[in-house]
Amino acid sequence: MCGIYGIFGREPDRPPDAEVLTAMDTALVHRGPDGRGLHVDGSLGMGMRRLSIIDLKGGEQPISNEQRSVWVVFNGEIYNYRELTSALIRQGHTFATASDTEVLVHLYEEYGPDCVQWLRGMFVFAIWNAPQRELFIARDRLGIKPLYYADTPHGLVFASELKALIRSPWVPREPSPAALRSYLSYGYIPDPMSFFRGVAKLPPGHTLTIRHGRVGPPRRYWVADQSFGQSATPQRETDALDTLRGMVQAAVRCHLVSDVPVGAFLSGGIDSSAVVALMAREAGTPVKTFSVSFSEPGFDEGPYARRVAALCGTEHHELRVEARDLNVLEDVLEAIDEPFADSSAIPTYLVSRLASQHVKVVLSGDGGDEIFAGYDRYVVDYRRRWIGLFGDLRLGIGLKWLSAILSEGTPGKNYLHNLSLSRMERYLDAIMLFPPRVLRHFVEPPLELAAIDPFRAHLSASTALDSLSRLQALDLNTYLPGDILVKLDRMSMAHSLEARVPLLDHLLVEYACSLPTHYRMRGVETKYLFKRALASLLPVETLTRPKQGFGVPLEVWFARDLPNFFRDQLGDGQRLANLGIRPAAIRSLLDAYSSRSRPDHCHRLWALTVLDKATRRFTAKSP
Image (cartoon, rainbow, N blue to C red):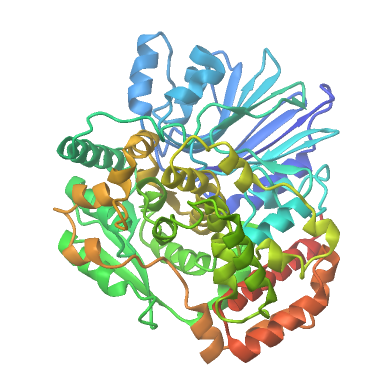
């Protein structure tokens, strides 16, 4: 696990600025405190920070081929590197190390840009082809590892994190209106946008080729939702159960490849519990597990995590999270760089800090809800599927009119509006922080009219699928890489901890998505086949209790412990005016929350608070 960075200028005889490369390197120390490396060739300079996991002595980067004509810097893990190494040796390649990094060099020599098709793992890497003066960059299929880049008039700048990228004076710090609108709508900034205009994230499953400092268009080599609608074999439930069970076991097994101890996050939910149970079967010693708990019963999964830990014989570590732990918010935002309204980043940050005191690698259960259909919002969609089936436009218009005449905050107003929408629009409306009908009161026209919406683009591309598959595909392409995996990567790497996600092994993802819809969700029962495949390993209550998301009791904390939190943080709202957000609307929301303490008001104020803090961080720092 590492952090990578680089500069590729358009003037071939002008070397990259050494001070800028050093500043980028320093900004990524937390991702790789065990070592560093840099390769400079003409106008190309690329480097990395190393967290030693595999081949502790011989895996230093950058690594080259025998002729020193092809070089690589790499962030991630290639879980099938041993098999690939053996195959490449048979094809005549010579290896100088036992690391997974060197596989990338020889695989690229053999297959060129198609090398990504052979990889099983999480990765972002940059390969320099010196004879061709060409830089090749690739990101893993699901977007587990991050990459930011800026195509500037002077050339390309790239880095694992935004904080490193903006150390280059080539990169402007002008907020992107489209990204701000997406943040206010969904609580995070989805790929390919970033907080800054002119800075992009390389989307999951894409590669990028740069020749002589000029950036070509991103090329997609894998489609997350391509397996939906492709019926898997065998179809009989008993056969599908056996296949799924074996694939989950194989995914966990290959994610244990490491030369350092591996632990696990354990929330007590189905996904992390399944991963821990299968780890316990594979490990020769007790697995170290880590979880958080809350004093508030509706949020506390501690008892369930302890039950699984006892059943699996793990060495369990638990951390109680309280309102006072909001004091790490600045550290959380420093780690993420961009505005990020998912408050569960706070306990993820804290449990990562705890785990880093015991292990260097952890497995996580993230991804199970997306591929096995585990979210409660899929159930809500199923229960409301009948609405609009008869094409009665008058009903929808009437519901929308009725919602519109009700004053803001009236019980049922949002529900009526939601029912008035088409099925896919209902889903988007339900997951938005500031839906369009609310957002227009908060922002000035330039921000309101920023039109890029990757969510609708993904929905438009999936019209041939059934409704459940469309929703899962949307989440796989947006929420998973934009929120869930950002949170996991940044919070763990802030503590130099590598987090792996075996349920996002791409072979498992392809199989799970290809299962018939009724194997993923049957009626209102989510994760139908997955639960049955793991039933013999987990406590009954883990499988049967209602889903409890990894939430934070913000509403309780602010009402009980920090009643003036939002007013103290946002003041009169004037600071956000420069971003196009109306101070009067913020003050009105503060007043409404003080009088009613509605959950949606709380979450919107939290998003505005995070935006305010994130913006101040960037404006306070010198370029």
